Each structure stands twice: as C-alpha cells, then as structure tokens.
Length: 496
Image (cartoon, rainbow, N blue to C red; front, top):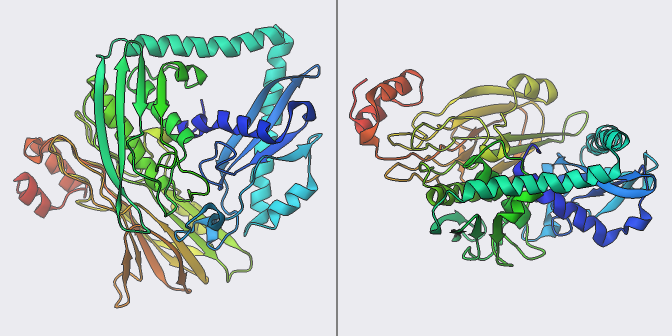
C-alpha cells in the first residue's frame, strides 16, 4: 500500500511508459530509471518524479521496485515550478521521459548533470532521487531477493497473481451487497485562465459484483494548469471503494477487476498532450469529492459533503546566500458527513491524513518567520454536521523572494441542505493600504524583506440543515474558536 492512492494508480503506467523507451533486454541488475513526464508515465505532474529499479533473479527480470514523490523544483519560470500562467506542458519546467538514472548501482553522471542544471535546488533534487533509488535497491530489491531465496521465483510470481485475485474476490463480495443501478453526481471547477466553470460529472453503474465509474460527461480540458491525468483518478476511485466497503482490502491490481473507470480523451480528467497539469491538486479535491459522493449514493452509505481544496505555497528566496524553495501543502477543511463533523488541517481520505508542516521546521530551514497560525472561524460549511474549518498561516519573509500557490476559487459544496465552506485566499501585505487578496492560483508575486503574506485555507462543506445541529455542538464550537458568537446566533439560533 502506497502513501497516496493516486500514485498507486499511476505506478503501473510508470512501468508501462518505461517499456515504451527501454527494452527489458537492455536492463540489468543495478539499473535505476527516472521519469516525470505526465504523458509518458503515471506521474500526475512533472514535480512528482518516479524512480524504478528492475529486480532480477539469475538473469531473469521478475519485478520492479518503484518510488514516487514530489520534488521541490524542476525549473521553469516560477520557483517550485508552480506556474499559474502555463498554458501547455512546456511552461511547467523540465519534463523527463523514462531515462536511465543508474547503472551498476552508480549514478549516470550525464543524467545527473542534466537534472542538476534544471533545478533551483540541484543538490536537494539529486538527493531526493538518489534516496528513491536507494530504497528501491536496498529494501525493495533486497526483500524480494530474500523471498525468492526462501520460496523460489515461481512462488513469488504466483503470489503476485494470487494477491490480486484475493483483492478482486473480496471487493466483488462487498460490491455484491450494493443495489444495482445508476447514480450521478456533478460539480463545477473554475478554469483560472477563462473564469468559466468546467463540469465534472461521474455516473456510477453498479451491476452484479462490479461497478463502473463513468467520467465521460466531464467537460473539456482546461487551458489553465489544473488538468488531472486519469491514472490518478483511477487510484482515488479504487481507494474510495475500499474505504466504503472493507478498509482492510489491499489496494492492488486486483481492484481493476471490479472497479472500472471510463474517461473521454480531451477532458479535464483525461487531458490530451500537451495540456498543462502543474496545479492538478486544485482539481484533485473535487474529483475525490464527486467520487466519494457517488459511491456513497450507490452504496446507501451516509452522505459526504465536499472537501476544501488544499492550498499550496511555494516561496523562492533569491536574495539569500543560497537558493531556497519553501514548498508547503496546506490541507484544509474536511467535509462533514451524515454522522460527524469535518476536521481541519489534516489531509483528505486520499492522502491518508497527511499533516501540515510544523512551524519549527519552516523557521529553521528557510529565511521566514511565521507570525500567525490559527483556526479561521466561521469558515466551515453550516449544517447539522458542519464542515471542517480552514485556518490562517501568516509569514514574514527575511530575504527577497517570489510567491506562488493558492487554491481553487470555488467553495466546497454542502449536501442534503448543508452549507458550502468558505473558499481559500492568498493575501499579500495584509492589513496595509496596499493589501492584495487573490482567490485561485497565483505565480511570481514579488516580496521584499519584511513583507508579510497570508494563506487562508478553505472550509469543508456541511451536511443536513443547520437547524438540526445539536446545541451542545454549537456551544463547543464557539468555545473552541471554530464558530463566532454572531454566527451561532444568526445561523444556529443560539446565544452563546
């Protein structure tokens, strides 16, 4: 099980992409291959780089070990390679089709030199990639070799197949209890380049022991860099099916036998090359929300509201003694559900509850001071079960820098009579006459030493009418700073 189910959906496509460029006959023990190109791998954007190592036994290729994760900077016009103005893939930094990164467990120096030359933080870049190769060799390859020594290569290969068969059997058994039928959910995401909404639509078609998630009704791909590759969506969908059935089912290739996803090429969720994808995470939360909502409907489980889009910031410090790229993912308000409130500051179901970066780490690693970090009152969607609130993080930079990041303009939707959450903002020079507030995504905002910027993350959607909320919960929210007394009075009818 990987750390992110979206990446789990993409890893098979990474290996398939490798075979398009390198024949198995040319591979040998000690090799490592690198890729980041979203249209030649399962990487959702080029910052998410994968390292793959072939595993051999007595000269035969038996498996691959792979590690995928975010890399802080791959060049391009904006620090952290977060270019909100990109209108094609070429505006998003270095795109790497599958290339050999190691041979005989040693770096391919030409590849490493090329990669270093295209990053603002070259040593961190090479360190990350080499660590990925190292874990694939010293843990992935080594443990597979241990298993082969103990049980033999045939037993290992049979186990690969049987693991998938067991998963397929278990998920089919669970899905068979769901009623047959068709359910539909849709939502809208804004294209920052045009200001026009794009429809995201999914229909679940449940029949027997299998379910199809049909995304072909989704609108055309965005001009702005918010498109999302289909492999990532497949990983989200199969993970959500597990979460709504038996969370102990392993997320592996067996899920493809029971949960099928259909896409339309040229759409927001299956963009055609060279559609930009750098800010795909701004579409990710909505994709997770509509998948969760349609599967909840299909299964008869309690309703789920929409999750707030995570905010992100990238600050490139150019005036310090060395280049810094401060990269943060800020998980926002989680959705309420029919039975409980949303939480705040913890990653979504897809990210297995990832947390925000600690203040101490940020201030010790980068030339910046955090001046404010607190819950944002009244930001979660109203409801019998409210959405999780957003929060504020405010920074004062100590070196000349440039800011990029942001979130979706659109609020996280409430369901079943619940209210929408508050949308996210990027605020530069807060409280000053020159204050600027930006919804959506931004790039390359110049900052000088002493300048302050603020990120206000969004709140999750609520479930069921606010009038049905238990008064004790309202009082507790006021005491915790999640709800203002005025909001408690005006929305929930309670004087606190």
